[in-house]
Structure formats: structure tokens, C-alpha cells
Length: 252
Image (cartoon, rainbow, N blue to C red):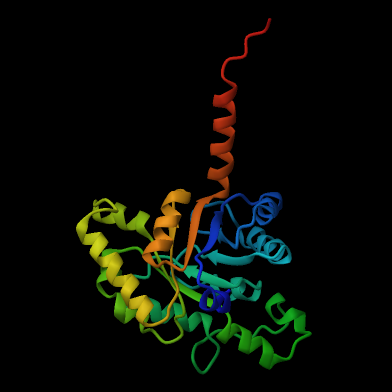
């Protein structure tokens, strides 16, 4: 996915996966999404259901990212060895957080990721160790979520973290923590500064969008990838609209 983000001139479109079921992942692939993000932070997704979602998504031609539960790093090794195309780390509030996250996703001497060649990421030991290490260090997306005001105030320092190769603007938590709306001049200024800093460093920047119209606006602003809604919301909205359209059906 990293190479695709660098090569394409279009914004990649994905969505969050919150339902621990393979059928919904398959349907998202059939619908034409470029990628999915298994959400271990805000859903019932376990390591096992996340692993299965990764396998199915990739088998159907989608990229598979994972948002881990927290910035602590305890899930990084196992999610990476499950073969995820990348990891989103929530609430990276400054350069020190970013450095810890990157270290957990890079092999020595650049980081402290353990060697797991007999994992799925190493094709169960069938690939050479050098290939496994190269893919981990050169092809895996390592994405800090900037969703606190302190992170946006230190955006350039965070983006300069060695090993960081993508970033994500989490406007939802940002508005919650600041009490400001997404259109507030302060947040808009920080967002534009983040976009500018990411563009200058050739770092793909993503964000989450409520609907297709917001996704188009994000692409026009320069975001490289967007997540539109989530699988539960997509199903819930479609079900509610279907029921509304049916209305009251009196029997004759």
C-alpha cells in the first residue's frame, strides 16, 4: 500500500472494520474499496478476528491496515506478524510517543521489533529472513494518529521521526478534546499546516470522513487516503433507509 500511495495521483478510499465477521470484509472488497482498517481501539475486534480480516481482505485484493488499541505498543509485534500492510497508532501526542511507536515497528538496529520469520508475515518461514525484514522495514505503513492539539502543535517534529512513513489526522478526538468544531479557524490552520508539512516530506496523510462528499473535499485538500464511515454504520444506515422507505404497510 505504501508504494501505491506514493505512485498514484488519486486518493485511496477505505473504511473502518468494526464488525468481527468475514462476510462484511468480503462485501467491502466486492464494493471496490481500496483498503480497510480493522479497528481494535473502538470495536469488539480481537487479535484473532483482526488476523482473519487481514487474510480475507488481502486475498480479495484490498490492503489491510489495523488500528491498535493504544499507543502502548503491546499489540504491534503480533499485528505486524499477522501480515498487516500497516498500523495506525492512536493518540501520538508528541515526538517521544512517535519514536516509541516507530521503534516497535522497525527491526534492529533502527528499532526493537522482534524477529518472527515463522509468522504469516514471514510466510510461515518459507521466505528468506532478509525478505521478511525488508518487507517489514520498507513496505509496512507506520502511521501515528495526530488527534490532540499538542500533536498538531508539534506536527513537524513528529513527521521527522525516523521510520515514520505516513500519518493520520484524527479530527473526531481533536474536536472532542478541544471543544472546537472542525471548521474552527484554529483547527483549520493546524490542519493546513499538517498537510503542508506532510506534502513537503512526501508523507501520505489520511483522515476519516463521514460521507462521500466529505471524502471528495478531503482529497481536494490534498489528503492521500480517507476512511469513509465504517462497516457497522454502512449497514445501519442502509437498513434504516430501507425501513423508512417501506413505511407503514397496511394489509388489505
